[in-house]
Length: 120
Image (tube, rainbow, N blue to C red):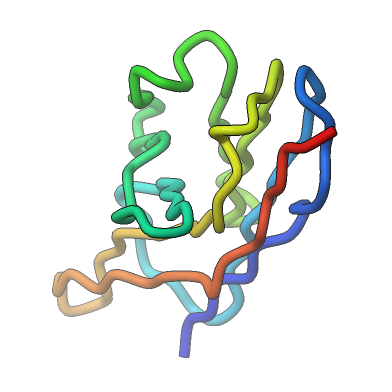
């Protein structure tokens, strides 16, 4: 069974930086898309950034120029580098992988989330 585990969350001051990591365990035939979502208290979960197998990246307008997504295909790991952080970046951050199995069926996996708090 595939599991995703996020790490790197914590408390950071406004203007600071953090790097989140998401590592996958288990057998994955092919990862098509890796993405980071976040959910702030009282708000809906929103897409923060995504990266395709070909390396195409997308970002939410609110994080463009401040966050950077990257992936290590050999390690089945995705990263989110967050800089110039703002209090409104406070949320639980989740990683998700859109995958294809050996039978070419789509399977999506989610991590349990890591809390990021931006506060002085």
